[in-house]
Amino acid sequence: MKADMKTAIDRDESIAIMEPLQIRDSSSHRPALIELALELAAKSAGFRSSLPDGVVMALAELVRAMNCYYSNLIEGHDTHPVDIERAMREDYSNEPRKRDLQQEARAHVLVQTWIDNNGLTGRAASLQGICEIHKRFGELLPDDLLWVEHPESGESVQVIPGELRSRDVQVGHHIPISAGAVPRFLKRFEQVYGRLQKAETIVSAAAAHHRLLWIHPFVDGNGRVARLMSYAMLQDALDTGGIWSIARGLARQDATYKRLLVGCDQPRQGDTDGRGSRSEKALAEFTTFFLQTCIDQISFMEQLVQPGRLQARIQRWADEESRIGNLPPKAGNLLDAILYRGELPRSQVPSIVETGDRQARRIVATLQDAGVITSASTRAPLRIAFPASLAGQWMPGLFPEA
Image 1 (tube, rainbow, N blue to C red):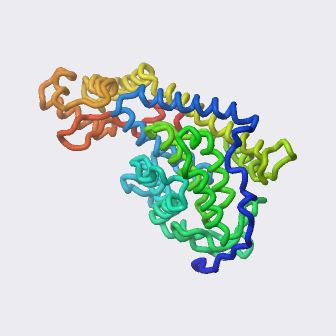
Image 2 (image 1 turned 135 degrees about the horizontal axis):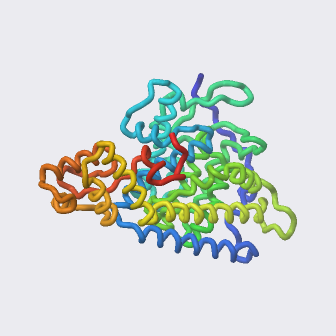
Image 3 (image 1 turned 90 degrees about the vertical axis):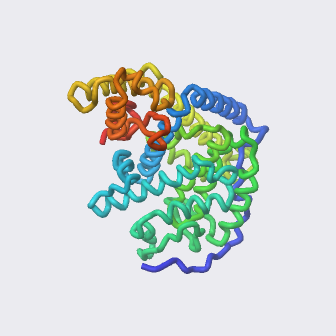
């Protein structure tokens, strides 16, 4: 095994071979894409505003695990959200390969948390931002996952977190630009995608997603970086609250996702197919798929957390847990109050569960031990939590059973 110390060679490819980077204003495809972008913006805003802040915070934590699970699944790594949740507590498997994948998942969640906390605001499509995503992710990985095998020579090449590749590569049938040309192409990438207004960012996020994969700036990790970059771009443009993610939709339509990405690699198909070197029609088809998948995922999440249905599922769980002695009586009442209000001052717990302070504290402690409520401190208000281990009962269909 050796570090990749080759000097990157620039073969002087023209920036024009990456065009178009956006769907033209005059394109026949654009009106339908604008309609989808407006629908996505309205649907995302409506969903975010329909939930109490405490529920948004809890849901965002679960969505990070979900996003990580499905993004890794696209890469062929199946680390269930329950194992991801354990990794976040540094509770790792004794099996080396499973432990490595848990650490990989933990890295993904921590990078997304950084994005959710505005760590990448305004920089998602910049060279610096793209490299920082890769660097933060890679620095959290175990050493075993920072080596890749060169497909032709068979040698092991080290992945340096945050560093652009220094050798030429081939990805399936696609031969990306020469390694030395990567900085030039990323400069153009940033010029276009890094200066967009919010409305145009929504329309162009899919194009940026493909073009970054087409450039293939890193030795490894390009898919995850592209999906995290797209996530950050949409968060900037839509203020999603982190409560939905496209990754689930992409993974569930993996063959279509990858087929449309390959389609975007194709050259322009005649005079009616835009003005750039690449097919505008293919880019518009991928953009349509991307935006519709976002809309579909918001609809799915809306249905999943529809207040009456979510409340009923949680109450059924609490009733059963109380019946078998795992929860004290009235625990379900407290969960219901926290869910409805978003957060609850501790001083109100005794009146809700109709007990004295001592029994009220016992109920709180039991629910905290079960992982279904949380608090910033011993005196801070109580908030709902959505543990991955209960997602099958509370939010069926979010991801497969463990």
